[in-house]
Every structure is written in C-alpha cells, then in structure tokens.
Amino acid sequence: MTEDDARAIVTERFGSARTDRLAAFLELVADENGRQNLVSPSTLPTIWVRHGLDSAQLLFHVKHSGPWLDIGTGGGFPGLVIGLLGDAPVTLVEPRKKRATFLEQCVDRFGLGHVVVEARKVESVTGSFATISARAVASVEKLLPAAEHCATPATRWILPRGQLDDTYLAVLRRDRSRVFHVEQSLTDPQSSILIVDRKTGTGR
Image (cartoon, rainbow, N blue to C red; front, top):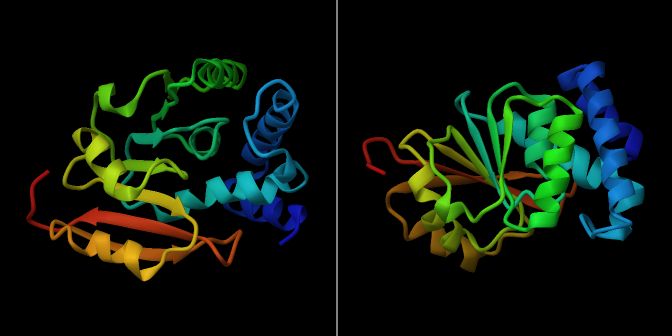
C-alpha cells in the first residue's frame, strides 16, 4: 500500500475536509519528532500508512456510538486521529507530560472541543466509555483489568496488535465473561486488530 492509497481510503470514508485536517496533524507529528520521539523515525516516510490509516481503520470496527477512551496515546495514535475524523467525545490518556502537552497543543490548534487529554495513568481516569482502544500498550491480560472501571457491559475494546499466536489467544479464552475475534489490519498483513466484547448477560 502506498501513501496515496492510504490517504485515498481515508478520504473515501471521512471526506476531504477531515482528511486535510489529518494531513496537517501528520505534518505536525513529523515536525515535532525532531524534538521528541513521538514515532519511530523510520516510519515517517510512510506516516499515512503506518500511523494515519492504521489509526483511522479502528473507526471501521465501532459497535456503539459514544465516548471513546484511548490509552497510551503517545504522539496521537490512534486517539487523536479518532478525534480528528470523528465527532464522539474522545479522552486521550497519556501520562508522559511532554507528549501530553503536544497533544493538548494539537487539540487547541484544531479546535477539537470534543477531545480531552488526561496526563495520568488510566487507573485514575473516571467515566464510562463505549469504545476503549490501546495501541501496543501492555499485554491484553494486564490492560483489561487496568481499565475495566471505565468499561460497561456494552463497551467494545478495539486493540491493534502485532501477530497473535495461539498461546496469546489461549490466555484470552480463559476469561469466560468475554468474547473476542481478530480482524486483519488494512495496513499490514502481519498485524491484527483484537476486538473484545463482554458476553451478553455478564456483569462488569
């Protein structure tokens, strides 16, 4: 997939105005990367594929509209991309102060009144969310308990992962209160998106 291909998919799904806004954000990330390591420098030439579309595709898997929680947003992925392309309230959890400051500056620059930055760990975040995402933050067996207080029985967890082997999936199968399935990433045939839901009739 080329950079033009990735941008074209975003434009088709979200329109040219929001795509242009995402393009401006990706330029800010590339510029800021010279001051703090938001993304791997090796990914900058393919920033649309590796970070733009890779984040935007999570919106294709939303189950219920409503507030979105992104854990460990870092340089803005996927959470700020979600905020730029969507209208639902988005909370970005990023405990590293310098990165949180960058995210706050981007929120102000793009007038994202529906996006809030929480410069703290997810364990101290309050509220309930329809969707929870986390990109390469901790293992799922640690992540789910850490943010469970922010979930409801209807919450969908959308978790970009790399390759998922059988041992990893076996750990998830032990949790009888949840059901999960795996979607292939649009941007990398070797990567997966883990979708986790609460089984009907189970509690928090």
